Image (tube, rainbow, N blue to C red; front, side, top):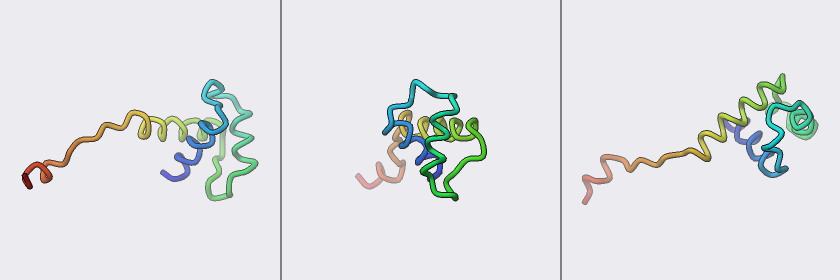
Length: 71
């Protein structure tokens, strides 16, 4: 999850959303990413970005059922 989140933050901070799927943003990320946060392919990088984007931007909060019982 952290690796995907780093890819998402990188793309957002560099305003590269419109270049999704291109190899150059992936190369830029790989040049500065720690080894344990790197991806083997550009496809994997963009897939990680999309996974994090879905969780961050499309997050739906559901109030826990147990919370309602307290009141």
